[in-house]
Image (cartoon, rainbow, N blue to C red; front, side, top):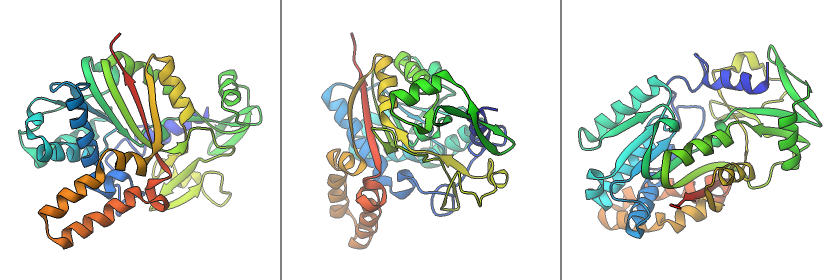
Length: 331
């Protein structure tokens, strides 16, 4: 089979890694910015309020998270909107795009426990189901979870059992490899379709996404497996893929130039790419900490400060993770 089919089955098959609820954070296989600090969502909430004040996002616009998993991220956004501009909770429409019903169930339960009937949450299985005038889309670590093909010196991989063989000629993969100057590595599938679906789902929108990678493609393979906070290179000769299959996360570095091209081809404007630490500081994460400092005991403030440092320090999530932003404006 194609490697993309193998990866899809690993992550999204009937018994795939993401098909059912998984713990993220200390008790899971990896950390994310969301599991690190509520101030990640808080900073996005502050940005959403700025978009409303700017007039780009309507007070009755859609705030939509894609690939929410637990629902923690959007819930943190709602919590900070309540703190900073509570009247917007009554006017904004909160949406999650989630295809797995098991995860939808957990997200609904978490929102019910957190907000009761105060926040109304709507689910769609895909962006194509959402049709609205005006939206803010947010995603955390989504593009690294798209299936990919593996490419090596002119040949594309196939999977025999759990063994990788590079002996297939795939013209589309070859074209992308040449475009992004790769003689080996991962070629993501689905970015173009995803961008088109988003472009067609809202007449005007801003889309912000956080992920790890660089604008230009890496010159090597970045594919790796996460299990119990251990990072295992996919081509490590000592691993048994059949034992890790569907029981662990599999991911790779994002080539942001590929994402940029997909959105521009869909008629959406690229705004910027910057390190997560710069993006969060620019959007006011330090201002939120100052508000906290004035309203809580010093012990609580210092605890939250240490968590925020993990988001913005270069040697943890601050530099390796990037924020990418796009906008579609009315014609």
